[in-house]
Amino acid sequence: MGLSTPVRIVAQRNLEALDPSTDLKHVSKRGLVMRTLLFAILLPVMIVSMSACGDSGTNGTNGMDGADGAPGTDGTDGMDGADALPPTPILEGHTADGHGMILPYDVQAAYNGDTFFWRVTYRGNEGKRHQYLRYTNGAWQKEGGDRRDAQASIDQDEDQGDTDILSTIYEQRTSIMVNDPNATTLQGNVGNFGEHGCFVTCHNDSRHMPEWTSANGHDGKWVDPAHMTGTAASGDVALDLWHWRGARSNPIARSDDQNILALDWTGSTSDGDDGGRKGDDGQSVFKNQNITDGHPDFLLDPATTWGQHTFPWDDFWLTPFYYMTQPDAATFGPTAPNPGQLAWGDVTGYTAAEGDTVPRRILRAGEGSRADITAYGTTFTPDTPDSQLGVWKVQMQRLLNTTNADDIAFVDGSTYEVGFEVHLWEYTTRDHYVSFPMEMSLTNTADPNDIEAVKILAQTGRSVLPDWDDFDTFPSTRVYLFQPGINTWEFLVGDNTGKVYTDPVTGNPVDQDHSGATGVLAGQPCTDCHTVRKVDGLASMEVLAAQRGGVWADTPVD
Image (cartoon, rainbow, N blue to C red; front, side, top):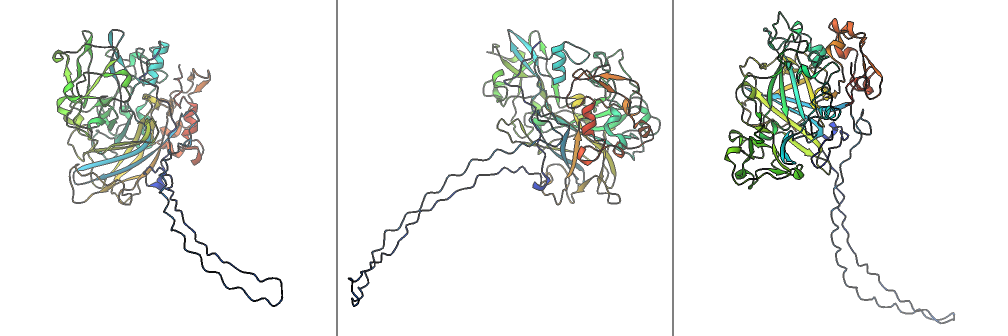
């Protein structure tokens, strides 16, 4: 089956590295301003009279000076040169077709009397659109999905993904996993997260991994209770997850507060368990609308969209109405007032026409623990002519201690373990970028830490954001993220020994024997054996992950 694409397929572009020497500010060169000045040059005219031939002739008299010429006029100012397009060099580790193993990611952290602040900076696609409902060929249909599910739809292979995807439209996201290694309770204390990071949450039967099937549900992230300190029960919160979404939260300056559970989940269950990545208690900041009795539950409220109930599919990349909000979120975010919703039963004077499109996701205020995190100050600065590639500066804010059982409280002077993730170019699941685990300290100067959160004195609340561009006060830590490929926890600890997956692109086997399994089982950190970039040493993830189904390759199959 073919895929429809909204106006154009977004190319997979090279991701330009951020240059720390520019203090993370994108600098574009301007043409020089040329200024021309015309001068009138006055030359005195000397008239010399020469004597006739003869020895005794007298000298002639000096000629008179000529009159001054008229002054010359000033030349006109030259026009400003056109702005030069910013360079887009191939990032170290990227191939010419734009598939990249490494993503530079700059992290800043701060806190005041009651609030914690993150800012993360990286280069990627705009990614602020997600899923839609479109009227085509006389009927409403769902539009949007990630690239792997789109390929599964083309192949009609339900064990490689959803098979009903009509177009590749998927938001881009970044998230931060947080572990508290000093927690006295089981909540948020994964004993080996500081050594192995997000790999402890990834399993053979996670979605789009080689052993995943449609019966496993959509998300296989979970932590084995054996990794928790003490005696953990299945269902305990293992990790805190700050999850920023480019389409489903950012337009209203919100993030999605989630967590990762400790589970004894080892595969398909009768109730279609989706694994352990769950929303915190309360209501999310987005919801789905569906097609009911042949029509959407909601259209755009024309009172908020200059009379439009929908937007044309052909204007997909241009319309400001690419998202929709409930009334309780109408004033949220930097572009408020926001386009609103109108229930189908309240719609008058509308007849569906070919190409009419409305958002499938509706943004709302959210409630409870799940709505704890805001994203004030987040910006996207395009740096390509089509505005689809640029620099994201994502900011997130949350109370230091929300008092919610599914949130890790940040305490002055304490150190935490964190891992970072980014999803780009309509890819999700195993195709996201990840970091090795790092430490983050709230001004704990006793130990050197990877990331230091700076304390802002005599201030509370999230209404005044840190001056992040003051890098002397709020230093930035460069982190290199990488694509993990099909590296699962079972692979790391040697449980996959003897298994061989076949890469469907090359037909070559993907070996599942991990030579470092003994070290992992003994608690040896991944970074004892591996670097991220090949320029930093041997056994780099940049090289190894590419051999293990990385670089957005097809999923090797069992």
